[in-house]
Length: 122
Image 1 (cartoon, helix red, strand yellow):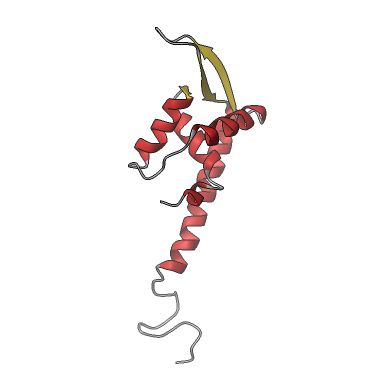
Image 2 (cartoon, one colour):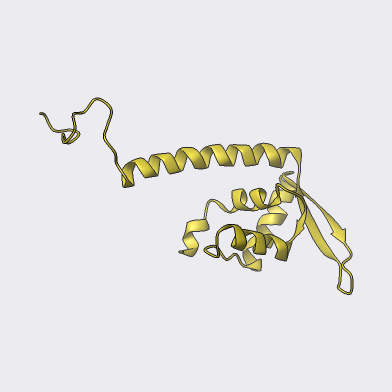
């Protein structure tokens, strides 16, 4: 899948994978990859600036967690504002995909006769 496909949808992807609970950066990357069936691979250089921005906007909060045998890592979780924004992202995505789907996979238009082409007089 083209890397450009994620552009404009990164915030929604990050918020969605954090919905079940807090995750650290690498786990977020893994969750997106797993949920997309491997089609989406985010890079650390992409997600960390986005996570920091979402935190500054009040959509995420973070805490430092100690990992056994490892250095500390930051875990991110949704705030109430983040949950509301995720709901908006989902609604916008549904509207967007319906509109694009209607253009790419046109079906019969309401009020037209079978076999008639829209815009042509019959």
